[in-house]
Image (cartoon, rainbow, N blue to C red):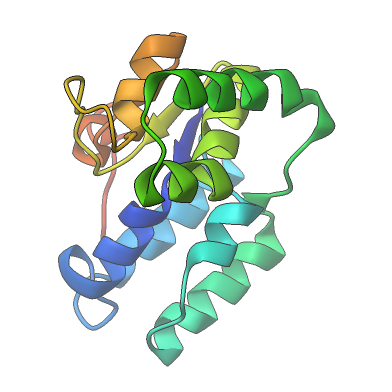
Length: 162
């Protein structure tokens, strides 16, 4: 299985769950899994991240050089358009809808759909919302897999030690 990481996973890990001061093994594990071609993200996710400290900045640079953040591909456009069409038709106009449409999320879904992958996100489904599109809800509607990151740790035999 191929997994594509949402922006919120990297930011939350750097701020809370796996700060570099006590969780460097998590960051090494991501790069190891990327070399195994199991974990990726996309260039637009990288662009959404504000570097908060030098260690995170260094890791982002290393990850970029390794090819972890793949560039959006022309082959993804039909999947991207499916996500845009769904959000345009399903949600009321507003800032949340604009943020979703103009951000990395529809491209992340397109990358997963095109590659038969799954999006890893900390977002929770919001099937009753008509104003705030969430990756899980849009993914479900389009038949794209999604899950929270902890659900894959055993599958990928994650070990966060250096």
